[in-house]
Structure formats: C-alpha cells, structure tokens
Length: 192
Image 1 (cartoon, rainbow, N blue to C red):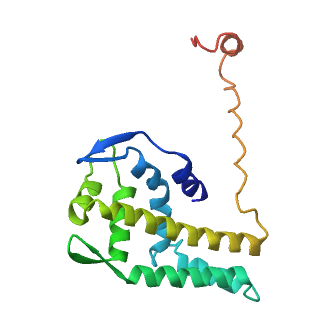
Image 2 (tube, helix red, strand yellow):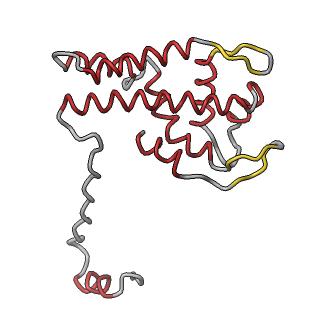
Image 3 (cartoon, rainbow, N blue to C red):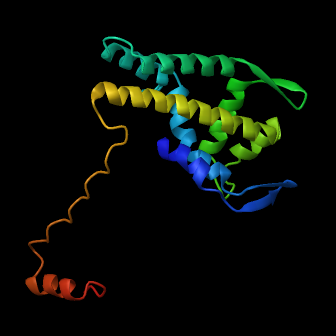
C-alpha cells in the first residue's frame, strides 16, 4: 500500500482526451494498486479489516501510545467524513457510497473495457466523483498505513519487509542422460 501511495505522486501518465476532458491516461491503473487492499481493509467482514487489526493492535500494546491514539483519531475522522454527503449533479451522495463505487471501479478496471464497472461509475456519479473517490481512497490508505506502522513497531518488525529470497533452480533430473545436461549447459538457447 505504501508503494501504491508513492506511485500516485511519482508516476504521471501521458495525457489523453476522454469524454471531452484532458486527463491522465493511467490514473485508474495507479489507483488499482490501492483499491484492492483499501477495499478489503474497509470491509468489516474481511479477515484483514481495519477494525479487527486495530482491535488486535490495541490488545497487543499494553498502554496506548501517542501513535495508536493518533491512528484511532484519524480512523474516527475518516469515518465521520465517510458518513457525510456531497452534492454531485444536483443529488446528495453519501461519501461512503462514492468511495465504495470508486474502489469497485478501480479494483475491477479493465483497460480492454470487458468489464464496464468504471464506465458505470462515471455515468452514475459523473467525472467529479473520480477525483473525490481518489482523494477518499488516498485518505483511507494513509490511515491504514498509520496502523501498519503502529503494528510493526509493536511487533518489533520493520515497516517494509525485505523481499523474499529467490527460489533456487530445481535439481537436474537424475534420469536424464549426462550428455543432455552438458549440452543444455553449453547451449541453453537450443534445447534438444
């Protein structure tokens, strides 16, 4: 999720004209990296829900430090913002509904337009909803990263885990004749 947040600011795409507006061609692709984990974290019935992770972190830490208190406050602020409404196209829309629609549209976005979740989202709420949905996604991701930082500190783990070790190549087949093994070592581009 940290990489997804970083990618939003550092990876600007080429511009294109879409529905009479100039926009970033790869914007939704960049939000896709955030949409899937944010969508899961905001779902209270998911195994990786924010609420469950917050409760587990609170139970693991004997005394709530300032970082956990700030995280809880940020979560409550985000929840109150999501409970408010915004006027789009003359109708009031709950920000929670807008965020859920944007997360679904970004998570299931297909560049080949086989699944039209993004088009349905734009047609229902308008192009302004894309910007609001993106901002709410970023706000939610930042709160989730705050909890991740607190949990990593409580567990004594690094915030960003090192990459996994590379898997070694499989051992040679003992039934394969020796001359074939030598030949593939000498000429790997021309297998027999």
